[in-house]
Image (tube, rainbow, N blue to C red; front, side, top):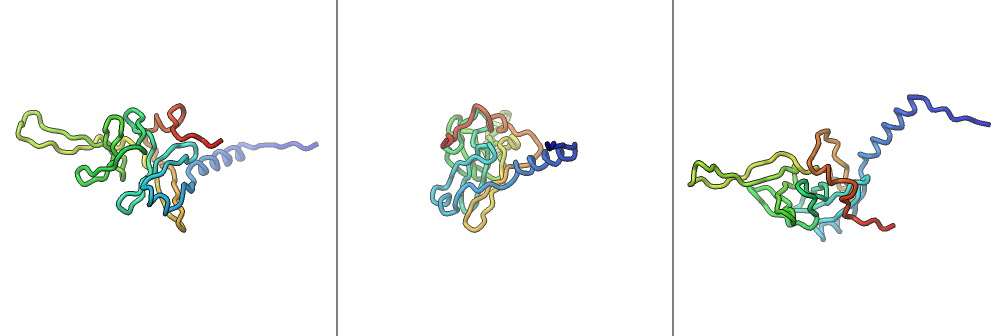
Length: 165
């Protein structure tokens, strides 16, 4: 008869390994495929993301818009104030590909001759890291400790990618 004993050190090590695994890179596709389609969707450690290829750069973010859960993978990429943004197809919210900032136009109501200018709402959409190795595209989930508005739609009932099982 044998027994298995787990010490508190073993539990801490197991929790640390689980946390490290959550932030390990996941291969989401081939470079040629994403360059051709300009976007792909993937599930990375149970989090749905969209990966864009735009003007020679890769960008990854949560697939659902921070505002109301709109499907960003169906949106158009447009430049606003010199910054490439994904435009949510539901409510036309503009999100920068590079930083996840929400952009809006503002005007000074006391100056009728003033022109609208682009302003930032701050980081609203969680951005993830994309790397390329030997023709494969990898996504590593963000480890940023702050809460992003898009976190609400990133898991659970809001999933849009159907599993093949």
